[in-house]
Length: 259
Image (cartoon, rainbow, N blue to C red; front, top):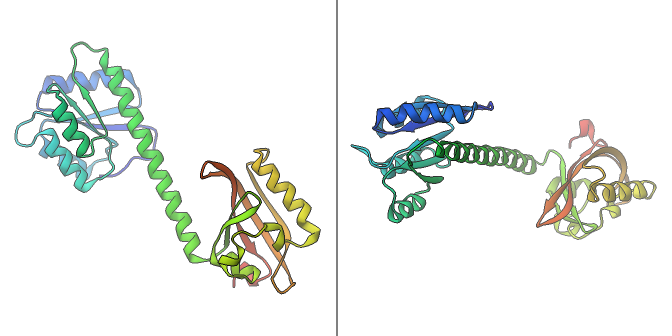
């Protein structure tokens, strides 16, 4: 299965009732022009489709021959643990809903007569996919950030309440400190006196939301009193529910900005 990267939402609907598959596709694609619905009549065929097609959300019946909706959900979760999966069934019960939730279903909706509920179903699909895409993007960003931290290519900092809450090994080494020594220090302690007012103003502006991101160059200070040519990149974030500034530091005093 390949995740899509555009705005379209590719839905795989699995149900043994062909007439319902046709109606559902027509109604969903009418409810939202973003939805594209592919259809399979068995869970086994659905698994084959997932293996070689782009699918953003699975919509599945419960009562199907060969493999029911919950067994299908288990198989999907084994291979695609976070793929949105909505159980859409005419055989609704609290027991089935409870089992589906325990198995990791994304959402649950009972089939109804008429076509009005298809708007609700389309909304559930769009909401589930939007959440999934946002979480996937966050994971990608977090992994990239983690690699950046671990590689020690640039200094990384988190400032909150006027002090360092986090620094990586690279930033500590740039200034000649251990990480444990820098955490709790004011960032102004590692800035040359000539640039302290500017750094203070920029931090305040970002924390106040006047400037979300800011890139500029300053003169920093090493623990031994020598000066450093530093480039700062930072932006405002929320950390533990309160505003903070997170960013990176490049040391141009070193050859090519590296050690």
